[in-house]
Image 1 (tube, rainbow, N blue to C red):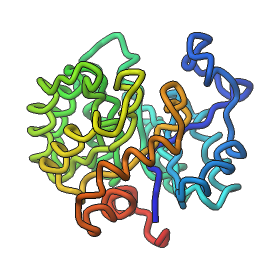
Image 2 (cartoon, one colour):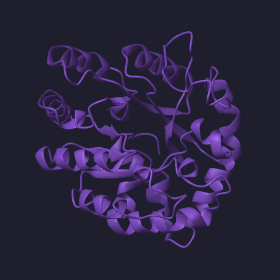
Image 3 (cartoon, rainbow, N blue to C red):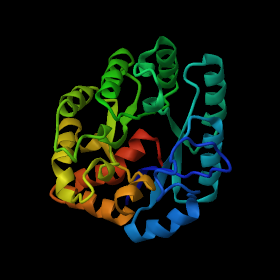
Image 4 (cartoon, rainbow, N blue to C red):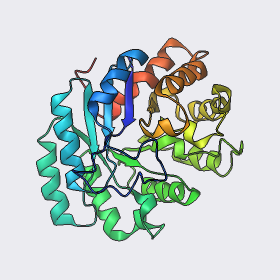
Length: 280
């Protein structure tokens, strides 16, 4: 059993995405489910979680439409207006009625204010998420994002959060700090999880599995396998490889761990975090 907890679709006629752009020529086009459906059987991935690519209801509704049509979609991580309490509560009521809605994400790295996540209005919205048991996907690409996530974790300890792409460690430079220290602090909260995803685009162009190994080993030591999950980051991964290369590299990095640890990362943690009961 393999669950891919992080993949995207985009249709530029449906949603005004700001990224990808023409600079990412390999993926600057409509990318929709039939394309991924051809790949999944070749990599033995059984289910996926579609993750938002734009902060809008239009993108969320688009993903939920797809989920209804393809039986390999286990759930959707959509978007909610965290800073507008009235709109947030209305949207939660609407989306919680949809069994495919499993969590939310906001593209915090696109905000001009690097402390957007800990603004009082945002924190109020995150507290509502925690009360409603809606998990939050954290986009962390700079140390400030992990600093912000740690503040949220301390102030709202019952909010379930998952750090996307292991917070994009500097694999190409073979650098571990401050990433390692920050992740270690976050791991102290049992409600914080992380995705082993997006590593190939954080590595050098000629990356190999061995480049990922020390980062994966460190997070397994920090979080335990039961709070880590696999994600492909397809189609973004196409900027630096193929879906099969990413799956093969992940398998290689995990092959010296126990069967139980591998099962945690490949599907059990995802089922627990995103409430995917019935998937397995």
